[in-house]
Image 1 (cartoon, one colour):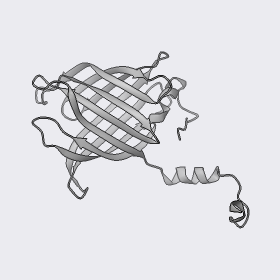
Image 2 (tube, rainbow, N blue to C red; image 1 turned 45 degrees about the vertical axis):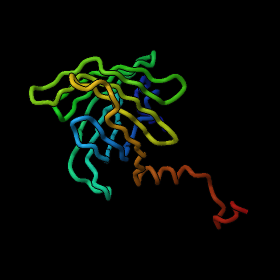
Image 3 (tube, rainbow, N blue to C red; image 1 turned 135 degrees about the vertical axis):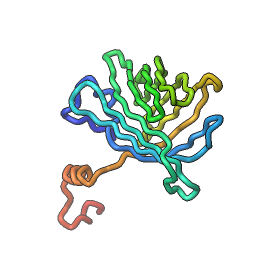
Length: 190
């Protein structure tokens, strides 16, 4: 269920489905790099201004699902305008800064993004651009990323399925909002 915080900047309501802490797993596969399964934590938060703050950490998983080592870390800011145009500024731990533009789909929580600009440090790996697709599907946040380099054409390289993490405070709030139950708790089912 998508909840819209009362202090969310009104311009961000169309992106409210992204808000929260998300955890899950996915697959990483790009030519010249080790194919692996990965775990991921993503946080979309806000402070009342006209952007969402984004943080993502991922790590390589072994065959038993244990963390082996860090894979990627990203941070950024997401905005949307009145025409459902999304813009993202993202910084990666690999020495890459990207500007993404895209659209929020009509009548569904799905965002298609394409890089508009890529800046790299001298020590970063080759990276020319990419595409991303994010979607809210049956309560999960699903995404797929595509990447291109001077030597590799645009192709999928990472995808993940994330579940929303519910805090104890959120569980308590949900419990407070349940309808009143009969005293014995069983009469409801009769």
